[in-house]
Length: 460
Image (cartoon, rainbow, N blue to C red; front, side):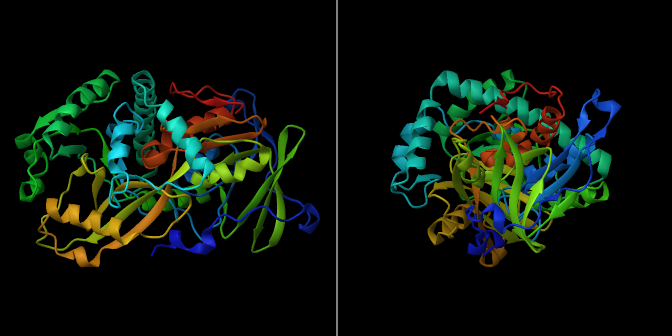
């Protein structure tokens, strides 16, 4: 079981009063002036969370000239949702879960333990509230608008990732052969054709491919026990190891002066006069209050719990996803192009000498237990598509909580507290959107207009 499943990693509730904390410790560095930012003040910023979203945000804030400290409860970066995700930088995967067909599919999948999307009916008001908001997003107009927003953010983010990679030389088992969505069901393929046209209308190069063309793009599919009937292909999309990327970017951040504090539990944020005055933490130095000029919440699914005491209610719920990492050996017939099995909502990414298969969504609160039925379903489907891989018995399973919003749009922007910002709620697209949302939030916190059109929050 991965470190992300450790019970000690569960969010601690704010339970310490101010008098129990040591003398307030400000983040190092002071307020400075930088003419390049149009006369704005350079801030001391505390970023909460060191997943791929928090670290990319820290990078762009640092590049904007701010003094940045990152707080993380795990012993290193990318130990939770970014640990073993599907590996796709997939603008082509931007279709919102909430669409006109979704309610009927959810009903069909109820009670199926290995269903791609599984709602566990439970006495959880947050789940029922989220579900109601999800249904409201399933209208054609809202689904189309959400798709357009997600594609714009994804295209911008992919461009920012490419620029960052060129500037830093960062490596993370990246591949640039595009992403192929393949279909084994004629009805699913027929439905994909107008969806691909809609995406092309938003500026994405998603091309419809015949079965023969799919096999030419990825010859390993020719060994499939399930007939490939067609696909859609986005040649400009990419893949890579999000955890490797995050930890490599941590090193670049540290070289530029960003500080990371690990094994540091976040106990709560203190408000004072419409602003956040400090964050309560507990780490190797004991209990502390850390002060800064601005605070950025990048805590994934736990953002909602952390913000609730401040009266900020997010439509955010954890969607548990699964992955299996399968070792590859010489002689294995495995894909090199990143793939999406749209019928089963699974993705396949070649990461060096490993095959990462990930997918499914289980709405079951903050539960991180590995469900053996869902783990077996991952391998059985993969084996049926790629039967000539020897290492299935050595697969490493993992589960993580994706921070899902009803319409799949992340929360990026300012809260009702003047110096408290959010970059969270990216669902399955955190790796895809990290650089774009990281750059956008750095611009917003610096008083600049981001370079991407998106419904940024302001005063939630």
